[in-house]
Length: 302
View (cartoon, rainbow, N blue to C red):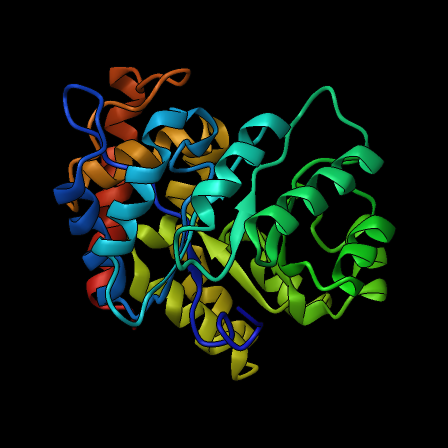
């Protein structure tokens, strides 16, 4: 999977639907995938929004089977592993039996060092037998120099960069990273809000989207306008995501998106998997209003 893959498609990061008994629901996940694909999106990344952090090891293989079967023939699915070292190494054996071209390693947030992370990523890529998506989400998780060494050694498919800055245009870590690796290999990983700055100023190769799962046509239009150099037009479309994105920032990105898909009527995501929990009634009402409006705008993305 190269930068050409995400040059014409945003990378949607969907939630994962579950049934009342907690099991993964093939019907509702397929329904969401069809909605995303209807907007022209052809890459699905199952990571934090799908709560792969808390996926049961015993359901990992069957979940990969379901996603592979549900996606359309032109859609690329990128599942995630980890975040702990032991879990990811056991999951490598299951990944080897599937045809996914790349897999993202979820970042561990404690009991790790940058050198240790680099070693763990190497071990997983070697055991899984394919290049990986490196997820840089926190400071001091993996230095730009170590990331560049992994790229040089050919074990990186692309890098998801998602360190949140108050001003995305002022980012010393990202500035160093794009000096050491081809910026086309780096993907903006925080949704539409910082994406245009990342694509324009840092020349990143693409961007991930959570709210694009609600409004895939709009998200694709942001990307297309950016590719054409119409940054003003791209920003005007991007602003339509702000009400729902603001709620994600205010409450919780994963919890809000999970319920936004359900409340907008796209697909029933069911109860979110612990260790997360659902929204309170007041927040749920706000999310429903914002998600419904965004979905309505998606029908006419002009």
